[in-house]
Length: 64
Image 1 (cartoon, rainbow, N blue to C red):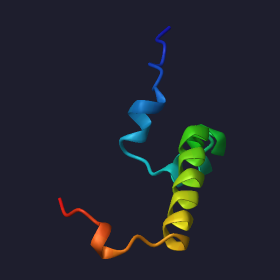
Image 2: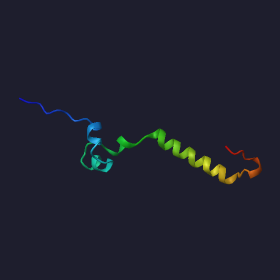
Image 3: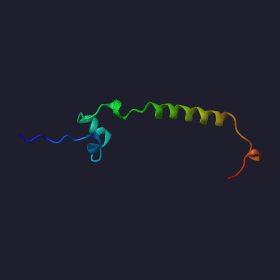
Image 4: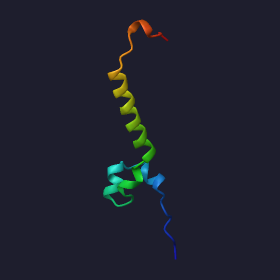
């Protein structure tokens, strides 16, 4: 009896989009969720808000 070779998610992902992988049932939506990435996005949003609220005058800026 011949066994079917198992295909890894890495091999599948080369030819399929995340939406296709989810709709075909190979992965669930949590597979693509990265808590560290989400936390980083929140921190970046906070930093952008701080910069908007506290403008630095051009005279204090150092060009690089």
